[in-house]
Amino acid sequence: MSSISPNQDLDLSFLYEIADGSDEFIVESIAMFLQQTPELLESISTAIDAKDWQATAAAAHKLKPNLGFFGMPNSQALLQDVEILSKGGAQNPAEVIEKFEQVQQLLAENLITLEQIKQEKEAGL
Image 1: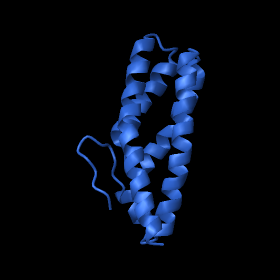
Image 2: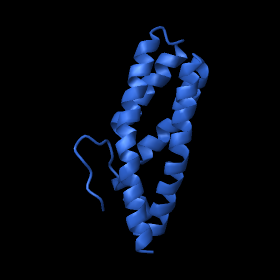
Image 3: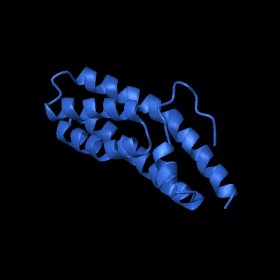
């Protein structure tokens, strides 16, 4: 498995546990995450830009469980903050933006690592 840098928020132990030795399951799960995550991040970003706080909260809510599945508790907690703040009408939009930017920074490196893991597993299939 690829090495994970200390500033990453990624623990794939749950994925490996439920995969029960199936590299195919791991590859398929990572591929789905790699496809959906950028789309959901873009939805959140677009909603924030439009100051559509209900759409921001809804998109954050949709992405949150995926982050938990892939062992990203810090990203998940930040996204939870984005969701809660947005549901409350984003009284401080700068705080929503700051937390979302932190999520994006954490996820950027995670997505690269997941792509590497996926490629390594695919090569072995």
